[in-house]
Length: 241
Image (cartoon, rainbow, N blue to C red; front, side):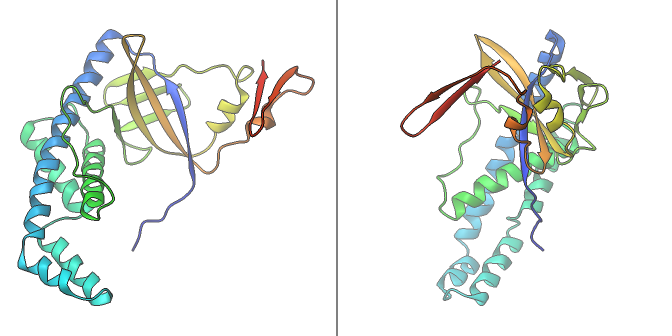
């Protein structure tokens, strides 16, 4: 059965990362980069082997319809080109590389899914051949599968737990940012750790993916507040405290 999808919105929040935390997370992202490349290498080999096989050629020659679709699905199963297969491949490479102290099962499986999506889009002509991650093109994020394991947001303490790491989140007060605190009351689907270069320094963030629709920001504007409007031909800018 196809996966059910629900609406979601994103909260991007800065993390307080000490120098040791920075080194540990950088090491985990580097392990993720290597794992990404290993899974991508094997995944592309599987795809190339499937496309050059007589089974795929026979399926490609069929007219569009149910039979042709079933034939392609059989090819994917035979050559292990599916999301589950790529997740298993990621787990295999993680164990072989002894990355168990760096990457959890959830981050590993999501990396497998990430590679599978890239290979699938390439297979269907939706994008070019996926590129490997080099040190000059590093991995910038890792994410979990759900909110209960792996990378976890703990609203009661205001920290993100990632294995043994406890990373405080920079949160404005409820008075200063009521929208943020209202958005945080929604159910969390999963979390993603992201890094960006800002002013020549690596900065860490957590992206909390919340279930549902984001609250309307205008609901949190105080009555009687001084607001400035700049009306253009097709847009309008609003500035307030």
